[in-house]
Amino acid sequence: MKIAVIQASSQAEKNELIYCTVKKYASGCDVINFGCTKDETIKYSYIEISVLVGLLLASGAVDFVVTGCSSGQGMMLACNNMPGVLCGYIPTPQDAYLFAQINDGNAVSLPLGEEYTWAGQENMDQTLAKLFSEPFGQGYPKSEAARKLQDTKILKSIRKSSQVTMADLIKSLDKPLLDKVLSKKDVIEFILNNGNDEELSLLIKR
Image (cartoon, rainbow, N blue to C red):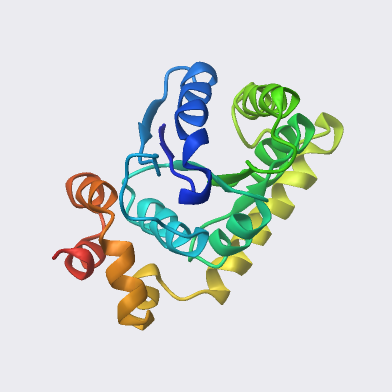
């Protein structure tokens, strides 16, 4: 599994910690760090990052994204507006485990600014440990696994039917927003080199 790490610029000082923690627990996975880092001169909001999350997943360049913002809620909501993205808000280890096992999504958002003391860092460590502790989509509790997984299948089918394609969304974005998103060259180049959606690649190639 290819996992992208990318969070809003407001929490750039947490980027290296997130990346290292994901690598620590997502054993056997290819983890790619897209920032945002403190060294980047261009700053990206959670809205702009959510579009990049959508592009990374829709293109097939990555399979899963770990992201976040100050509250984690805004990024989760923004990512869930992207076609094909099912993003969970994971403030605790329990939330992370249940999302992975029941909802089987392709992105998670961490609350990186709330009460971020030593205890907050420890909580994030345990949360990511629990997220990757077992293969996704096994259902929980085990006695209800079949029903839970069927519900998740239905949810994903409804979301797909109710959404436009990522290519159509990109075509509809205002030019200033799209230009800002496409200025994140490390993400765009990775998608062009590793994605499998030709239409998306043509739309974002500059």
